[in-house]
Image (cartoon, rainbow, N blue to C red; front, side, top):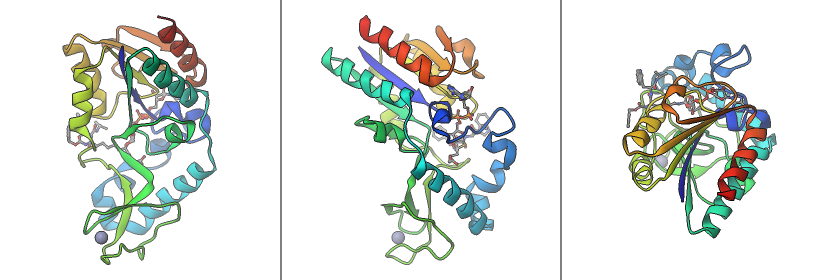
Length: 231
Ligand code: BJW
Ligand code: ZN
C-alpha cells in the first residue's frame, strides 16, 4: 500500500511550536500574516520579519519531536516491510519529522533551518539568527527559506506525481485553510483515493474526507498507525 501523508502545524503543536489559526495563542491571532509572511512585508521591513523567524528558529532548535512524529517513522518502516511506501509531505517549516527519523520529508512551505539568497537563490543551512546584514557569498541578502503568501509552494510536481500512485491520503493536524495544500484532498478524491483526516477538531474541508478521527496527534496518530499496519 502507498500512503500519502500531509502534515500541518497540529502535528508539532505538542512539541511546543504553536499553530497559526484557532485560539488566542495561535500565531496569526497574535501577529498579522500580511506584515510577516509575504514578500512585500520582507521588502518593506526585513528587520521585523527576520526578528519573527529568528524567535521561531530558536524555539525550534530547543524543541523535540513528539509521539506523532515517531509514529510516522514507524509507518514508513512498516509500509516498506510490506512492499509499500510512505510519501510524507509537510507544510511545516520545522525539522521534527527528520529529527524523529523520517527518511524523506517534502517541505512544501520551506525550511526554517535554511536560508536562501534573494539574489542567486542559493540555499544554505542556517541555525543562527539572520538580520538585514546577513549576506550570501555573492553579496545578495539572505532571507528565510520559507514560502510566503503569494509565492509558489515547493515540489508541487513531485507532490502531484506521488498522489497518482497513492492508495490512501491522510491529512494530519492541518486546518485546510491554505491552498494549494488544502486542495490536495480533492485531487486525491478525484482519483478515487480514500481520504482520512486526523485532527484535534474538524478542519475547514472535513466534509471531503471519508474517515475522520479527532484528538491530540500524539494519541490518534500512533493508534491510527497501529490500525494501518495491522491490515
Ligand atoms: C492539532 C493539535 C494537536 C492543533 N493534535 N491537531 C483564495 C482561495 C484559494 C487560495 C487563495 C485565496 N486567496 C489567496 C490564496 C492563496 C493563498 C491562500 O491559500 N490563502 C488562504 C489564506 C486563503 N496561498 C498561497 O499564497 C500559497 N501560494 C500559492 O497559492 O501560489 C499559487 C500556486 C497555486 C497552486 C500551485 C502552485 C502555485 C502559499 C501559501 C504559503 C503559506 N505560508 C505559511 C507560512 C510559512 C512560513 C511560516 O511558517 O511562517 O505556511 S502560512 C501558514 O499556514 C504556514 C502553514 O504551513 C500554513 C497551513 O497551516 P496549517 O499547518 O494548516 O496550520 P493551522 O494553524 O492553520 O491549523 C492547525 C491545525 O492543527 C488545526 O486544524 C487544529 O485543529 C490542529 N491541531 N493542535 C492534532 N495537538
Ligand atoms: Zn547568492
